[in-house]
Length: 368
Image (cartoon, rainbow, N blue to C red; front, side, top):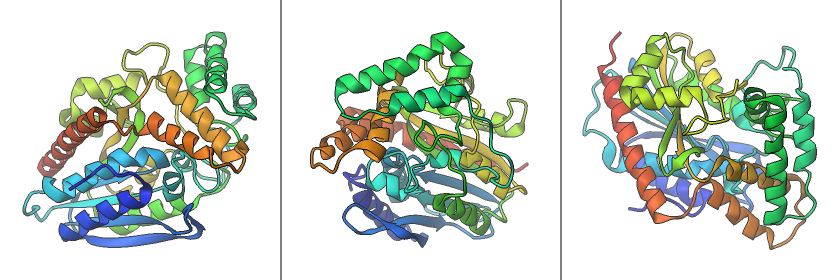
């Protein structure tokens, strides 16, 4: 069976087939207004294996950043097809959310139907929004490219990175990746109201995780780390049990490295302070549970090239003319964030199998 898909629709089909054959209970949440480029529905699918009242739940999701959903989808499909034990113990269940941002995924974009970054949208919009850094406005101006070329991508990325020397690495990373709420056409815009995906994730957690006492949460992404290699981000306090559990499951050095820097080598990319992440949502909506885990990343290209992908995504979302040639640039987005390269896919599959197995085994043994 194939696991890595050519498109969002194919990935969804692979996942639903595997979930059905695994005997999972499946729920589909369909976007009320947005459609795929071909006019088809956009759906978020939730599959559960195991008892609804299980105390320990492995919760996995993908597609938060749209185009980054392919590796997670492949991992979940393979896990359901041949990674599950024949019978889960009664205290363990598995809940998988496939396609948190189906709009972006169907267009090989990171943004959603509102042009926002879903992974910065999970905050309380009834309270004052975080203040804007002047770097956000500078980044927005740099992003505003009229005509696309690889030269334009390189110039924009270099102009953004030039500010790192001026303001320091930490402020630069906070502005680049931390989230902002004042510049809709800027980098990491988190919106000014809860998005559809936000509401659906909150509902899913309340519906499927309300009785869980212990949760292992894994959110699949790409872009950080060595090519095809596993890179993790753990958002728990280093002094807490959840951090220790995650370190036991994934490896202490791997977890420590991701907590300190977004560069595998640690240079000039200190971990930013992130607002409105999906991790915050899980913690808020399941206050009764101990929660371990975090983000599963797979490296694709250099940090400079990842930023080129962000620039390209902005152009495709806001500035690209209606032109068949845009298909070339959307394919380039796929190359930046989910390459169709056999060695990359094999490496991702190997690491995914291990992290799924380790997380399930650790969760199963977690009793207090």
